[in-house]
Amino acid sequence: AQSVTQPDIHITVSEGASLELRCNYSYGATPYLFWYVQSPGQGLQLLLKYFSGDTLVQGIKGFEAEFKRSQSSFNLRKPSVHWSDAAEYFCAVGAASGGSYIPTFGRGTSLIVHP
Amino acid sequence: KAGVTQTPRYLIKTRGQQVTLSCSPISGHRSVSWYQQTPGQGLQFLFEYFSETQRNKGNFPGRFSGRQFSNSRSEMNVSTLELGDSALYLCASSSGQVNEKLFFGSGTQLSVL
Image 1 (cartoon, rainbow over the protein chains, first blue to last red):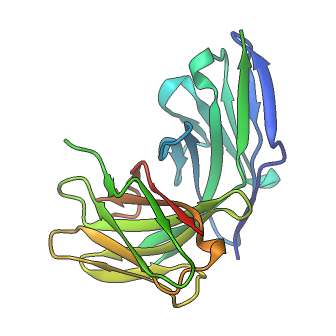
Image 2 (image 1 turned 135 degrees about the vertical axis):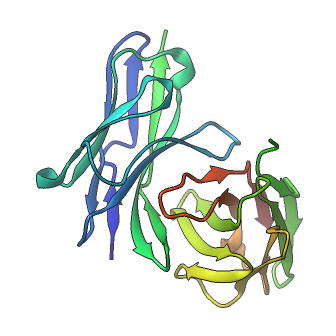
């Protein structure tokens, strides 16, 4: 069965600083990988996804992630954090099934941004 | 286009009751999936419906069920509620193709007393 580990429960950064959120996955085949963001009381919004091809993926809001098969990682990065980036971030791996995929989510990383 | 709409936004029930949650997908989307989010277990996949058929199912007891109508709207039902069913229930819609993104609703917050 697939699994996702987000080692950091909370991360605190200063506005304008760079950010890296870690994600490690376990899956037997080529994974579908995702990063989502959730603001309080809201649903999830997809930041970016990796299905195949270029291992450096660009997403919305200036985020990017790099798929490293050898390390089973899909870390999320942003060069300069804005106060509005404060939210919960979820990494997910999708296992292909029935013409779609079944997602497994990490426990999330809460991003705190200091002014 | 209107986004994914979930109703009601908040719900309070007592143990043993049953509950039905509703999800209206984005127009044209044929796939609806449901998720349970709790502080203890995190985000977990419940099931996915595509063109009125359950296409995938997560690891939840049979008390959790769902269905999808011909207009792609979906309902999720939980029977014999337990305290541990208190959670934010999220639904998401997509076109149904494997490489298409999911669009999430804001969820229904269910409290079981």
